[in-house]
Length: 130
Image 1 (cartoon, rainbow, N blue to C red):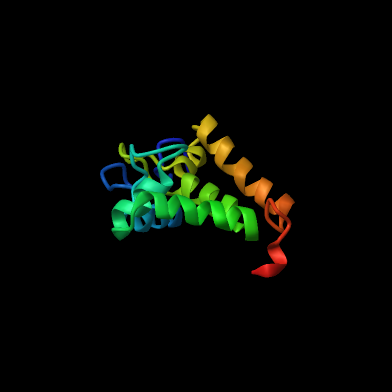
Image 2 (cartoon, rainbow, N blue to C red):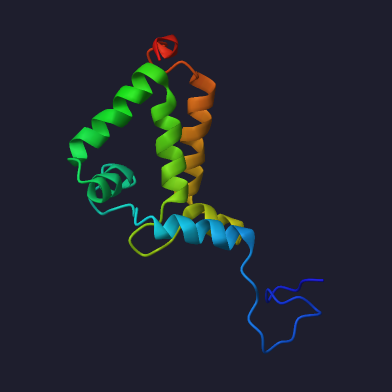
């Protein structure tokens, strides 16, 4: 049985709680070194990817736009990255939501993913090209 402290009833109080699969998952995301940056137009995803890969930020932004217009996947990828990459303070929106702290940023990120799924063929309807 688990209470709100994260400790199970059969686990001694002096032992720290073992990390969950979700904790390990979000820890592995943090270890990639990808962080949403302050260099942002929307959520800092392109700025974070640019900083980590050494590619110019406008090239990353252009990539997302092209993927959104032609294949549709740009919106979904951006939304997933927004939800899963930590910001400069270390907050991961999806992890915070798992703990009950749902923000407007996560709602917008999920909205992008849903929009991508609804449009499917991109904003220009050219998904068949890719």
